[in-house]
Length: 431
Image (cartoon, rainbow, N blue to C red; front, side, top):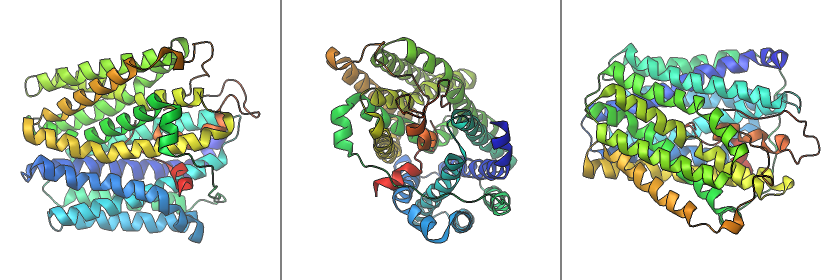
């Protein structure tokens, strides 16, 4: 695996620069809009445009890649994303920023399609799990590192926008220098969201709830932290701790999913996340340290809802439908990511900053009730459950190849680490 990882060092370098710059920008924009005293509902509408653009990009950016190739597409997407970043600093206008966020979402989707399809093409049955585990660690650490950059300069200046644009532009250099053959974009079977819900209702809704919670936090978390009085370095820590917690808590939850009924694990995870969300809302403005502890618990657990939903869905799917189910789950996640910032922003406008976590509490409460009301006969027994593979929206490309029912599967394989971001290039096949 290490030999393969080293051969992809240029791709990893581009990934680190790209993800750090994008994560930094997302937090920067929420913070800047809060400092400009925009209403939470306006901030929510501006920032959710990124999710709309990203979902649209997962469906159509692949056409550009197929036409001009991976490296040229990466250059086009990165250049346009950098321009969009710099234009933000020219004028703080809601309509302009909303348009720029949609453009950025589309370009970021295209960039992730290039990166992740390249990783997938270089993986085989012996190294795929380890390679994607390493990929996910790099992705999480880069996202957390982007939060640290908030300390570099005041959000009201041009400097942080320049820094974000520089990181994205620099991501062009390593990938453009690679000698590796670029992969092809493959097509896959399609599964509708309604069919997915009928066959795995908790899995489908779990993906949507995860999209709601994660996108809400990435978009409105900096606004929450700013409006309860956190200093700039505290906002940086607040966001970074939540992201690192999502990476660290994935391991123990994965172990529990193999030992216990996954419906119960999903229910317990939802309840714990709801309690952590409620405590974070209550502590808002009183104790920065305790707020960071409980927001870490909240996001760490919330990020596991997606992989648990994937595991529950795979339990009821035939092997040849795993990729189609993965695509549908990613689209379900995307729907949730489009709803989350808007709903959370409205709650923040009604209830103040803590409305962010009140909205999450309400969604988690309803989801927990839905799980508890599911008929017992629909639950596979622990013995009937397939092995748990910790998948996130960023690791959806390899699900079919690592499914234990695949004839080419080799024991000992697993996928380890969600983000915001959110969706990957499998959704391109749904077009």
